[in-house]
Image (cartoon, rainbow, N blue to C red):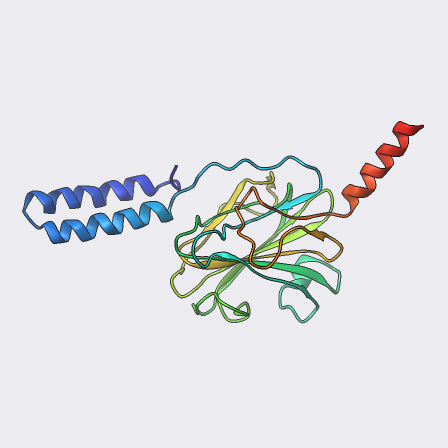
Length: 232
């Protein structure tokens, strides 16, 4: 399965390759087909099986191929430039995933809820390694769900020069639903409440819409109350 609209463009490239092949330009044909193969693997949009457990936060981005991985998990405070757009708390947890150019670049909703904020920030296009949040182009979406708010920050890199957002403020999204895409190598930061239980480690390979990143604490409270009622 490919990203919407990609098949038509790939068809044009394939037509050009056939044209050059018939004219005997085999080297040009080879380069066009190689480029086409790269684009097809990049613009793939596979189906995902999202867990249905209550109170979970799933990965918004893939970090699985080559250098792609979760490479930052840390507590942030009010010095973070976008924290006040996400939560009223002074602290939160940041889980950052670096996507290599060979990863799936469609981003998915980490929780079920309503898009309550979205904002785009122009910036530079440096390599999406390390702490480049303040300098690079980025896009913020905030989802408010039953158990709390989660911020998704799409960050462009030196190759990724177009951030795409599929959803708008006021829309309801379901956990695992497609919410956007960043073209080529890039990074996605998840900002989650500080009292969440983190279920991944630095170096973990995440799969958007499937890998459980964290769990809201209120889920355990509801489970305990339910168990007590059963005993009564």
